[in-house]
Image (tube, rainbow, N blue to C red; front, side):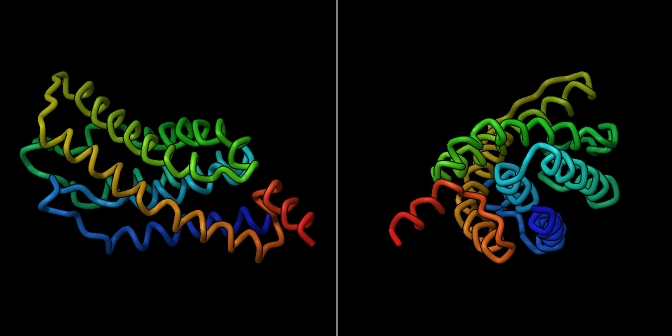
Length: 194
């Protein structure tokens, strides 16, 4: 179990590196695949609550650090003021809240119904982006919700969700290597066939 948790932490760190090379789709409202969030959400449903909170802390801390020192992305019409108006650490709380959302469907996941978790990753990304946008507007003291923002949020959530089966497949393979079954129901079915 500890070995699998360490591997999920390393996978999350690798997602941060890979995220730097994933471009925004300029023709689709500057939407992008949020690989870091996707890896966190997929891993959150496969581990226990303490490991999920560790992943939420690491993911949220590094995401805030990335956004604080990196270029402030997005369309200048959408983000007219820099994102640094948000306090450092808000992402940790958002990651933890979404991690608990994923933990809520863990009983279904343990029965081998990972497809529900894959669909929930898109919903969780949508919630994350909307919460982040609402926080930015709250801090600025104004609320503007343009069509470009809605398009960016929906397309980012949808495109990110499309890659969740690939991340789950990777997590299944890693759990087999660690001899840590993350789908006990699926393991029971294999034993019955033998």
